[in-house]
Length: 389
Image (cartoon, rainbow, N blue to C red; front, top):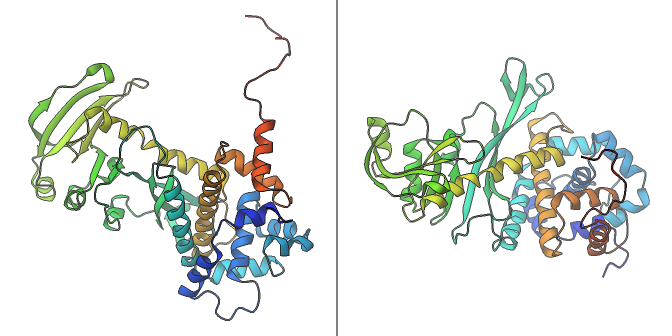
C-alpha cells in the first residue's frame, strides 16, 4: 500500500538501495562525506531528469520550495547548488555506471519475452553510436573540430524492450569500429550493425565466438561468388549468395565464406547489401533484422528529446559522464516500472505523468491508470468541419 509515500519515493523504491550502496563502496564514493550522500545526489539528479530541470539553480529552487517533503522523497540533506555541483564534479561516475548495469540486468529479465518484429529465439542486439555536441569554450577537454566539442555515446541495444545492454562514452573522434575491440560476443546472439563497423578481422571474432552478425556492406566490397540461392522477389529480395573475399587484407582477416543478401526497400526504393555469417536464417529474416536496427536510432532520438543529455549541469568530464549515466538509470527505471505495473502506457506518457505528480501521495499504479482512463480511445469530437471536401 501507499502509506503516505510520494510518487517519487514509490518510483525510487524500485531502485535497489543495497545494490547502490555496494556500488558506492566499490569506488569508494562515501569517503569523507559528512552530509549529502551519493544516494542524495542520485535522487536529486533523477528528480532533475524526471521533471526536466534546466540547471542546478533550477533544481535548487524546486527542491528548496518544498523542504518539508525532501525527507519523504528520501533526500536526507539540504540541497544547494554548490553542493550538488561539487558532488557531480568529484564523485566517481563509475558508481552510477555500475548501478545502471544492475538496473539494465533487471530490465532485460523483465523484457526477455517481448517481440521486436522478427520471431527468433536468439537474443538480437543493434550496435550504433550517436554524437552529443558540446560548447567548445565550456568543454575544451572534449575538443572535436575547430569550432566545437563533442562526445560519442556507443550503445548496444537489446531489441527486446529497447534496453541498452552495453554503453560507452568516448571522445567524438574515436571510430565506431574500434568499439568492437571492447565487445565480448555472446555465443548464439545476433549483432546488427551499419557499415561503419565493417572490419573483417574484427568481425571474424564474432564467428570464432559462435555469434552471428548482420552488417551493411560497403560499396567498394570486392568478392567472388561461389553460388546463389533462389529468392522471392515479391518480398523485395534481390539475391542471396555465398561469397568469399578476394582482396588480400580482407581475405586474411576473414578467411571463411560469407553470405551476401541484397534487398530493396519498398518505401524508399533504395537497395541495401548485407553481409552475415549466419547461414541458418532465411534471406527475408536477414533483411528484416537489419530494418530492426532502426530501434537503436529511435532510442537515441528518444533519450535526446525526453532526457537531459544535451544540456549539462556541469562542465567537467566527470560531471558529464555522471549525468549521462543517471539519465540512463532514469530511462531504465521507468521501463522497469512499465513492466512491473503492467502498464499499457508508453514510456513518453509515463514520463509526462511523473513530471507533474512526483510530490503527490497516491498509489503509483493509480496515477497511471487514472491517466489511462482520461485518454480517449478514439476521437469523439462533435465539432463541425469548417470545410467540406
